[in-house]
Structure formats: C-alpha cells, structure tokens
Image (cartoon, rainbow, N blue to C red; front, side):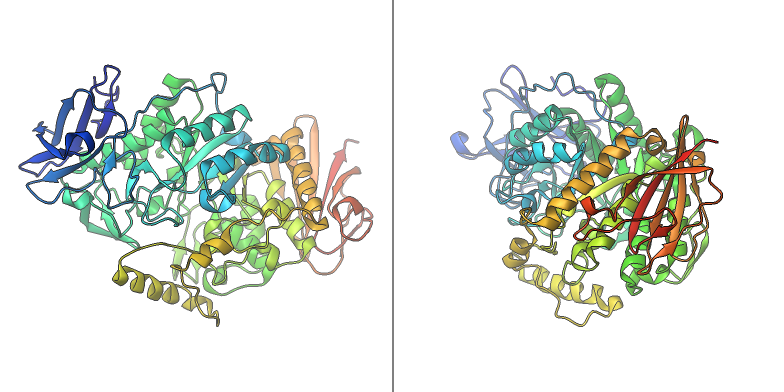
Length: 606
C-alpha cells in the first residue's frame, strides 16, 4: 500500500511485499511511461493518471538498486523529480531505494530549540573523508565540547562533485558523493546515540540551474514572481497543490524516515505565497502533527531576510508557527563592531548601538530607516522568547560570500575572537558555531561549484564579480569552478597548537556554563536587561529565580572602567583575560576591564 500520508505521494516506494509503487506528478501530460533499465532491458510500462494529475503503477519484483526514468508525452526519458538516489549524477537514471533501516536510537526524543547549542557544517569540507562516515568519526569530539545539535548544509543531489548544496535539483535524493541514504541514516542514528540532534538545511525556494527537470513534468514554477536564483516555485498559482505536496512530503521524509530533528529552511522570504494559508504555515502544521505522532521533538528554523516575526509567531497569534529563525543582524552588528568594516550591507552597522539593539531586541531594524535598503525596515519581535532567534559569529554565508572566504580568526585578534564567542554564548539567543570556529580554523570557506554547462559557468563567474562590487574589494574574484577552492575550504583540523587548545577549552567552558547556569538558560524577554553602553563597554543582566548574573563585554582596544557602585556585591565567575584563557598572563580587577574582554559576575543579594 501507499505510504501513510494525507499528501499524495511521488517517487518510487518499495513495499513490504516486494512490489514497488511508482508515482509521478505530471498533471498536464497526456501520456507517461516508466522506463526500467538493468534486468528489464529498458522495458517501458504505461502509467495510469488520477484526477489530481498523479501517474502511478505498481510492479512486482523490483529490487532496490533498479534504475529507471520517465518519458512524458513521448519525449526523451528523464530522471524522476522525486528520485531517492542519482548514482550517476543529475543527468543519470534514478535508482529505487529501500527505505527500511535498522535504528538503535529508540530512547531518543529530540532536543527543544531552547536547549540547543548548534554547529553548522558542510559534509564535503568537514573532514578529509568528505562524507557522512567522516562526520560520524568526529561525533565524540563534538559531544566533548558540548555541541548537542549539528546542522548539515544541504545534502540533496546537486550537479558535479562539489557544491555548497543550494544548487540542488533532486530534493529527495542524497548526494551520491557524500554517501548512500543508509549512510546518512547511520549518521543520524549515531548522532542520537551521542546525544546530538541533527538539523538538515533544505531549499524550498528554487532549484539549481543544471539538472533541473521539474518543468518537463508540470507547472512546478510560476511567472508571477522572481527569485535571485531563478524561477520561483509555484506555491499559489494554478496547479500549486501538487507542488505544495511535493515539498511537504520532502520535509516529512527527512523528519520521519531519516529521523532528522529539524529543518533549516533556506531563504523563506523567497517562498512566494499569497494564498489564504501560507506554505510555511501548512508545513508547520504538518510537522507538528508528525511530532505528536512520533513523540519526538521536531524544529523548523527559517532563514529570513525580513525582520518579520509573523514567521515564528504561533498560529493562534496570527503567525506561521515556525520554531525559530536565523538572525543575521546579530552577526552583522557584531562583525562590524569588531572589524570596523562598513562596506556592503555592513553600512547599516558599525558602532556599539546596533549590537546593543540586537542583544536587547534580537533584530537591529524594527521600523527604522536602512540606508542599505533605502527604506524603513523591520518590526519588533515584541515578547517572543530569545531562544527563537539563532545567532552566530560566523556561518557559511557570511564567510563564503567574502572575496577570500576569510574566517573571523583571520580578521581579528585572539582576544577579540574570544570576546565574540562569549558575546554569542552568553546571550539569551540560541547559539550556532560554524565548523572549526571552536579551535580557530584559519582555512577559508570559499564558494565552490562543479557545473558542466559552459554558458552557466561563464554567467556564474560574472555574477560573482558583480556581487562583490558593493564591497569595493580590489583582489581578483576566485574561480568557483576551481577544485582548489574546495580543497582550500576543507578543515585542516590543526588543533595541535596553543591557540587551538585554549580555544577548545574556552568554548567547552562557556558552553557548559550556558547549560548549567539557571540565569543563562532563561530566555524570557523580561529575564535579560541590557544597559546603555559606556563607551564600548556593554553590560547586561541575566536573571532566573535564585540567580542573577552580570555580563560585561569590552569591545574597545583600550581598558574600560566599570563602575560597580549600583550593585551590592559582585563575585567574579568568568574572565576571558585570565591566564588559563590567554597567551599571556593578565589579571582583571573588579573595576578594570582589559581590551576585548568578557567578564561575568554573580550579583550577590544584600
């Protein structure tokens, strides 16, 4: 029988009796044939169409590994848009995959966003193996420093052997060079056994330009809207029901069959939907139902270029009900404050005030005029808890979209690097590290692709040059097609040096403090009080019943005096300038905060 799901199924599904259901959505087609290869010697089978535009057939004795394609209205046979595996790349035949897997994580119930310490990584660049199996080997290390959630950059099938993953064209297929579907499931299973949740980055706003066969099947795209990356997907135009089902089924596959603990959804502002129920709300409802049935926590985190709290507000308050969102403005404000960069989109930031605003309100722009956007921008998130906002000092976008892919470790001093980590981990927001950050990786993270179309490659190179104009960077733009850019971006794992050893201990200590201190676990809006800064010295209080902490962050290159007269008694519990965290021994007095230093005090009662 068909997989249990209220959304019509597309793809090839191996059933318990050895039969295989083939289903493909092509509502405007007059004829669809299934072409089986291998032992069937490219034998063709006619599919039957239902009223919703799905063509189906059930065949006996179809073993996993069988290769197949579809021919629509007599045209050349092409891969299945819902293919589960493309062993020969985006232009090759699709492969039937057995979805069954022996799981051993039966006690796993997931982790709420409130408790997550996240770690973004790229499967191809994280380890020398460039694979899921390589990640499994590093899970004990990640667990030892306190990471309890990894976020995988997209793993859906993309062209060639190397890519960030946002050019994927088969949303249901695991990229063939990373490993098999079973190897990805083995990674999730192993992560759960180490107490680590897995979030997968997915792209529901566009498809990549090479190997995109969806348009040959039906109205997957619409001319009503545009995206920066190509045609907009059809979420509200004629025949949109099939498209919405396609992507909701995709989300449910990752969350249910692969047991992912959540999804990070790329650029949801480019998911255009003017219908009565926005696609993101429908997706959130479907995932909440799955969470209820499975008994496992599932989270949906959106990347949004809008400061629009409606995406993460509960449905009963007029929102779409997503769990949380990436908060780029925290990064921009912190980065500009530390580096003094004010070009490109950093022109809206650059001094203490934006970072203070991000600490206090999560968004920096809540209706003010943005000179980069040339308009008023944003809306206050009001009383939404801080943990719904994921913050970071680095991520794939903010490093990889620099001309040379420089990490923060190559741009600021060692002390400033520690200050940035403290600013992220001591805030009430949900923190996310970028792979290698915790030991000060200096290898860049560059933009890389492996396309085969000469015209596409030429346009890509021109586009990258155009993209960097607003930053006024003088150097030559690296060639994304060069394999060297991928090699340079792979982590060095150079941890056998004093700086790396200190940083690993430093991150481990701060993460443990964050997990174990009641005041640092409290993410309610009224539990954090951000004071007006004194120069470049920022202070804020974190509160919980029975505990009251004061955090000081000195972003100045000079010592700052802290006037502590308003507090009855202070007990210092953390100081980033102490000898154990430093390359040179220093000591901080209560009223004297060295340059680029974070200090935490317990506020003692009268």
